[in-house]
Length: 132
Image 1 (cartoon, helix red, strand yellow):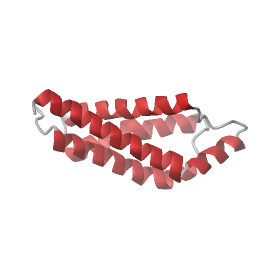
Image 2 (cartoon, helix red, strand yellow):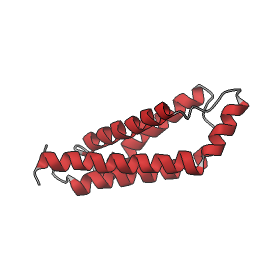
Image 3 (spheres, helix red, strand yellow):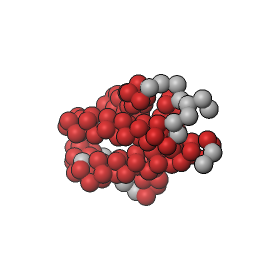
Image 4 (cartoon, one colour):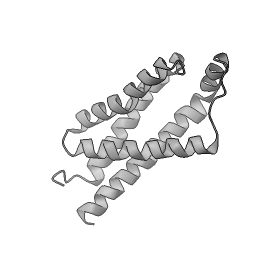
């Protein structure tokens, strides 16, 4: 398998993992927390199919960014840098907009760290040639 194919495969696998992880965390584990928090704000939690499509796109964009970071940094550095830019900054914005239920962070922090580490490990395992 050539380098370009491995790179695309790495991004695809990382993106699939990220989206599966996001779905489990936000739709299975924490959905009621999100819905209740939005209701307490007098809002309806956005869960139309288009919202799901946007989150799937976010997952693959996150995978691309993580892959690009992995070309210049170690596994641990990649995972932490990607996690910080993908999650911590998102939490700051959603907290600032008052739509972040802070109760989710107990679960979201370790699970999102795991998400970033596994996605980074997939990139390193599938496309180890970092000279591209």
